[in-house]
Image 1 (cartoon, helix red, strand yellow):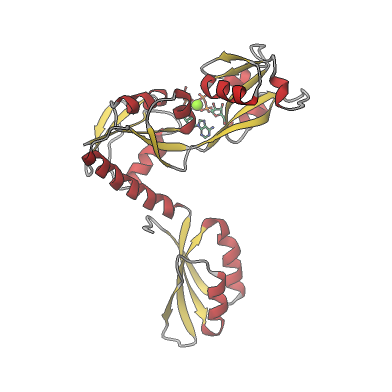
Image 2: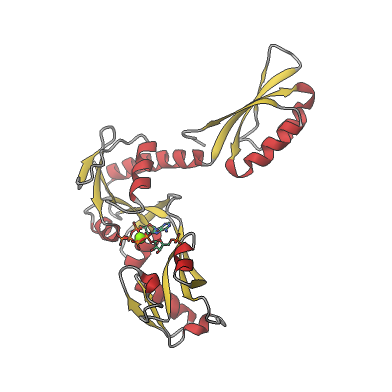
Length: 283
Ligand SMILES: Nc1ncnc2c1ncn2[C@@H]1O[C@H](COP(=O)(O)OP(=O)(O)OP(=O)(O)O)[C@@H](O)[C@H]1O
Ligand SMILES: O=P(O)(O)OC[C@H]1O[C@H](OP(=O)(O)OP(=O)(O)O)[C@H](O)[C@@H]1O
Ligand SMILES: [Mg+2]
């Protein structure tokens, strides 16, 4: 049986449970449950604060963990990143009051920076040759400058709206982060085999995430042109129709170029375009 540590409440919780569920691993996630067993996979879920996940995985209390890369780097625990999970994307940035002129990183020399990530920040300052004082604070970092605790801050930025509402301006991006799956370094062969099964499922879910399955009726005299605008996995499936001037074309489209391609297909005379989500994709 594998044991995975996930955040008990907070920004990672829902996406972590959803990922397991999309991989067809069903767990009950009761508000007060600390340990739950999956019903259809040999997996136990341990609900922890995200700060404690890297250590619990490194020490073997849990075999696996789902945690933000930022938290994993900050803790410097001996565990391995198995794969990136594509959610909770954010960056760790330096920010300063918006009206202050910023000549470059050297501005931070001799300044005080408030953060909850002293490990990542001190490593960065050292690499950049900046001599600044770090003030550790566990939350509400963005108000530090306005209440006079610090000259600048180093914290998580996503949309940037917290910075704006605190009159701050992002000046340096230090790292990009997303949720990652981490593993203990001494898993038994049996546990490694289960981990591989899980990762295989996660990859199938992730591959399907930004893709759509599309079907359309295409006039045969435009078929070659229609095929040339479709990326497809290999090449599209073309199925004859009762009306022999038309055929049905099936393919997979990436969300990013979806509308652009649909527009071109319509121009080329495609009709009855059906778009359906894809649950999993095994490449
Ligand atoms: N605004 C955001 N957008 C995207 N991802 C974020 C954002 N804020 C945090 N994260 C990611 O989610 C992780 C967990 O964030 P969360 O706010 O739940 O925990 P926390 O701030 O450590 O906990 P707490 O607020 O209880 O102290 C962070 O470590 C980071 O990787
Ligand atoms: O750029 P934005 O989209 O505004 O996101 C950034 C904010 O999100 C996180 O806080 P959260 O909302 O998790 O609150 P917390 O301080 O309680 O962790 C983070 O600590 C930033 O303050
Ligand atoms: Mg937070």
